[in-house]
Image (cartoon, rainbow over all chains, first blue to last red):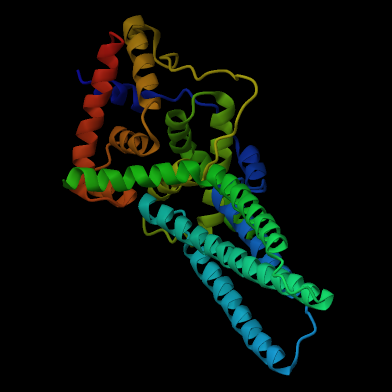
Length: 201
Length: 168
């Protein structure tokens, strides 16, 4: 007899399970879920809030009229992008349904997660650009005030290294958190895709 | 949520709880993990119950949600202490039917199935539940032909695993 067929025979008769009564089931209903989707939702909401707070708390340097107009246009575009991310995230989040097929569910989770990831990438890029341009502008301004004709190359190089280190650390911690959270899901998704591709060949 | 809905759900789940237990048995190796996964399945089922329209049987809907929970949603917790392992035994079988050799073979079989990856376990579960390939393919989101080929490969894989251990 085939291995699995022997298991099948036993499978139907197997009643060797703990019996969970109605009261216990009722208690379970009110417990909090610890699913991947719940964590993705919590982390994404934190990301959206932090990203928005960060953009609001950016220091505003004294600019002339033209610079202020340019900055206002950039700000409006920035908030439109944030609005796009928030709308997209909630639209995709609502599509996650546990009674979908295994493949569909995994795809929806990964797609939702990708919006959060793109949002963070967008914020890191904006942060780096704003930080770098602000910092270099400040260094050049102070050199001008001192009347130093030589370009402060060393100060700029140190500043750029610090920025690069900070961004690298940010990316590292970010990958660490999501790497752990999504490892199992990604592995299973790849397995399913491999199954489709591998058999087609 | 509506209290009537809760009463109805609890009754249905109590009747059908073995579906969840059987999936937990394939996806976990100890009692504590079994309880954790069972709990998460109950929560997921309860959260999506208002959307269950009765197009399919409760049992069909429940096993699909439970499989999805085991494969995609459940985060395996790291345990600092080893808890009691599942007893893959024939204790529930009548004494005259008890066969120690068969018990040993079953233990080897369960151990082999637990070594499979999550997608393969889902296929094995549906095979053991005698689901047809149309349903298996639909549940996983793959083609029927691929489900069939994959199932045959799993059977061979299990047979090889058992041969290595000198089993069935």
